Length: 317
Length: 310
Image 1 (cartoon, rainbow over the protein chains, first blue to last red):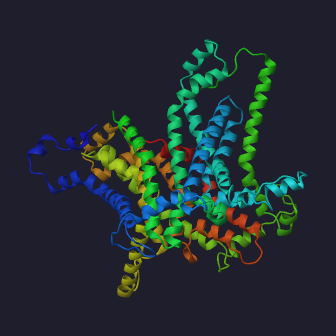
Image 2: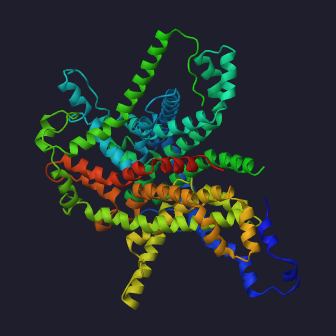
Image 3: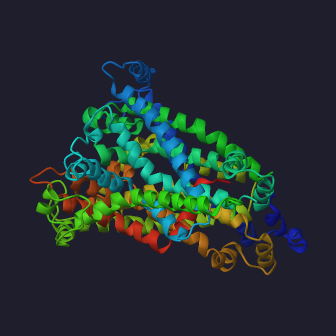
């Protein structure tokens, strides 16, 4: 579809006349309307990204410096990447990113798909259950963090409750343990997002042609075979979308770590986003903070760009 | 419907099947509800009851005192005036930010579908990608620019006796949220208007209607569903934002609700009043929860539209 609309503007008589000011204005109006938004995006998104990249090649400390130096910020990050004993903050952040990212994505996909399949068995009360699985998505990460911080607190929450119920050997202090604190972030994160992934899968299941299912049932496929061989493969596009959404949310995660763990003992729950914030605004290492932001952006782009490219191309074929 | 219901199986195993399915669904429902339930009951208990009782027990003597205290007296950092001021900060930030970004998104979507020009795809692609950047990559430059706004505000104050909004934290946050919300609102409206019949637009044009007239008379009256979706999506996102809020309005009485809540919980003067903390968290969660309860269908649609592109 090209500019069908603008071509129609010029009716024969008018094309021969000199265009009036008003007509010319009408022709330009759409572009004038779009221009501010586009200019804002160019400057505040792409310009700012370049600005951040520039800063990462300077010696900026507490205040931005604009004298270009070398890639020392990246060299430091690179060195820190292998500094595991004792772990550097950057080592902790990227290790946590991998642990959190993988577990968060896997568990959300697994629980989401499982719940969607269960809910798709002609369940009475689906209208009540679905909103219950999904409501955490409406809460802010800060609220989620506050609620789970309380729930997982060894002295007040789950552990204490189990002790009161007589299970006195029950021990669960992950939230205070520097080696396990990141897993509490996974728990709260999965709790928040898995319902949404369920909704995505459910929409996908409902979109499957019932003829295919009937046909395979006639062929004698058992329910498990039916799901494994036919339905789940058909859901591949949903898997892809869900994967992208989850990866995007995982890389952006920042608030949850702050609210749930306050960074964990000695910064042991940091993700790269927390690293960036701390180094930029608290530790007066702006160049390093910017370099870490650039790395986050590069990671995200590697995931998003191919996806958006294929989506936009498919749409307009 | 894809429901793979079991066909020729003995009735007994079928019943068992159903019991297992319902059982699992209920267990999951409980897991999803418990943290919220705990938060709610804790906010209705007295401190002695919290220290001695069970976290899952219903309050013996429900009290709304913690809520009143959270609203009017809780300490945020060193000031102990409750969270109501921060709640209003968030409202003052959310309403204009949602209105402006939705309106701009509608106009952008209209241009990008009904008034296409060469390169419209590139423009859309660039705006779409902007939705996905980690905001860390623009955080610092934006802080610098907002600092410049503040300087400009001082100049204006000296010259005219008012800062014209420059340097005002709420205005800053509105600006930031409009800038980084534009991609999403444009995406929503573009996809919606893509399916809107172009013939109607053409017919209106033949009748001599102009650009804005067509938008107002033809498209807007048919846009209610997507407006609701966009407003809910933007409202939830902006209300729940923490990164921008803590970076650009992270202290003092200009904080939005999320930042204030985080400070209430981490204020360590005196005895920690868990019931007040939970009440504050409930108050912070209420607006978005309310929206979810009242318009859940649109909420889900917004999430999906934001997730499944193109």
